[in-house]
Image (cartoon, rainbow, N blue to C red):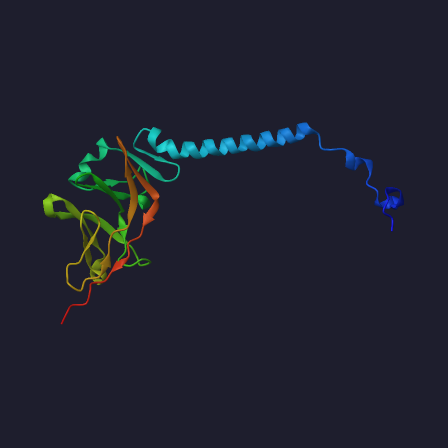
Amino acid sequence: MGTRFEDQPADHWAGPESLDPTPVWKQYVLVALLLFGGLIAVLVVSLLAILPQIVTPPALVPGDRLVLSLSGTSAAAAVPQRIGPPLVNEARTIWLTRMPPGNYFAFPTRWAPRVGEAECSVDVDTTPGPEGLRGFIANCGPVRGTYRFSPSGNFSPTTPTGTGRDLDQYLVSVSDDRVIVNLSRLIRAEEKVPAPSQP
């Protein structure tokens, strides 16, 4: 059966090179490189996370976060403020508005009545709404009509059977001295259909 070492054929024996272990210093170098790579990754992620808090506004930082100063956006409480070139390109221009007591909203300047349709321009409504705040209006031409929105971007049907959807909006956060608009997070509004009238 060959249960002893001496009974095993010579071609089954392991060569002397198999007994030579990997030098320990190579293992230390590999572990050190892995730790160093992990440390660099943590530092990069941390820097990107705190960058909106350390840059001087206005600025667009990696991650598509638009940093604006709180004092520079105070006029958005009376009339929505248009933020565009050179800070962001024309396709990413936004409307920034502030509702009492200090809630900020950011909307793209383009909107479509239904997702996937051709977009139309969104402008500030020249007619002040309640409390003197200005909403928005989208004139989509003679076929699709004109749509009105509240200052917070809510769809305001002009007829009882009017259908549409709210303005799409970006996530906005406010800190002590700055407003941060996350341009990578667009929240698409769902289409609103009015409830059927009771007979």
